[in-house]
Amino acid sequence: MSLETEAVISGPIVREETSAAFKRRFMIRMIAVLTGGMLLDGYILGVIGPVTAVMKAEMGMTTVDMGLIASAALFGILIGSPLGGWAGDKFGRRPLFMIDMGLFVLASAMQFFIDSVTMLFAVRLLMGIAIGAEYSVGWPLMSEFAPARLRGRLMGVTILAWYGGFMIGYTVGYVLNLPEPMPWRIIIGTSTLISVILFFARIGLPESPRWLWSKGRKDEARAIARKYLESAEEVADIESTEVRQGRFADLFSAKYWRMTAFVSWFWFCNVLPYFAIATFADSVLEQYGLNGGLAGGVGLSMVAVAGVAITVALIDKAGRRLFTVPPQWITTVVFLVIGLWSGAPSAVVLGLFLIFSFLNAMNGTLTSIYPGEVFPTEVRGVGTGFAAAVSRVGAGLGTFLLPIGVEKFGVSTTMLVAAAVVFSGALVSQLWAPETKGKSLSETAAGFSH
Image (cartoon, rainbow, N blue to C red; front, top):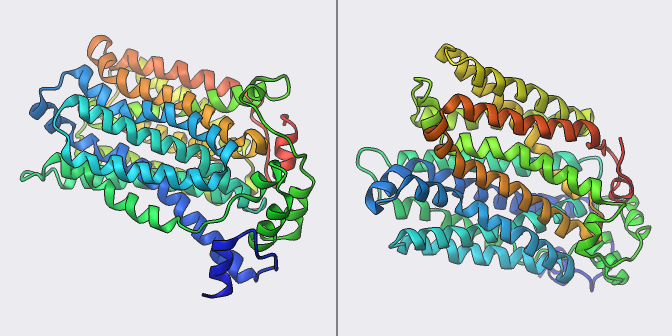
């Protein structure tokens, strides 16, 4: 066994500095397994869209049933995010990182044997719990290993993987559901292969040195930090951090309540309209006389991927607020135009939806960055988990209520409601979104101002 391989397995025992090449290889591996988890999340939410009609017909599902199934994974994330964040802060990032993917392998494989609407809901709820834990453990882990000069870019790549996963899942679901369709249980069960690969790829990853330091395990923290972190400055930043046990109540303390409110509501307002429109892209576009199908669902996702890619490329140079505040104000105007201009030409409506998808994705990239930066180490997991849970309330409500809202009130009124939601997020971000570009985690978590 090589020294580098032994270092990964035995982490805190070996204390020597490692080469820059080894540290680069480790960071590449860390990025790969984290982005893989986000790709998997996007995949399971995207793959179900094209097969909902077949599922509805075969299982006699009502409109309410369809909304519940589409949002089951999102409500699972509502449970798994705070639970996984609490456990990650208490027991460590590494064990939860393996447990959540193991749970995902189990739940994903169960999809092949679904025989009722109740079982389908339960399985996808379980998958959501697993991916919720992924949010609250994976992003803190990435932020605690990433160098400050690249942290925004590396954490933003996980969102790029999410959109890519959604687009891949939607494409797979659509292609396999062509005139001679594959059984829908097999189509949604294809996520099993991805989860198995990721489970084995995560074996042997080290614990977060910042988490170890926060628990007073300073020797282990120094050993891992010297072995895997890019520079001596990052090691020194860890050593300057106060050893402190965090509590869930800290999120609502006088010092931290604004960061909790900002991250949670900003995230909520970003995902509610996205999940609603992306999940039911076909039906939304058809309301305006536009062809749906592969071009509708994947087209919006491709534009979103472009928005994330641009944000990832510029985030560590241009800063966080530029991609947080302006996109939300513009998106508010987009929804107002769609809602108020009932006779708009189809080409105009399509263009506005594409603008929304692009700007929403830009803005959404920050949902992977801000939680890992503004919460201190001792509550980074539970803080991220709480914000993710709040956001998934928005995502679940959007997915569940959009088809009902369109059916009961019409698409114009539904778009005006979306405008009001995005407006509230823009206002909160204008007031509270911090600029954290280039700062160490100790600096970003020490204060909350721009």
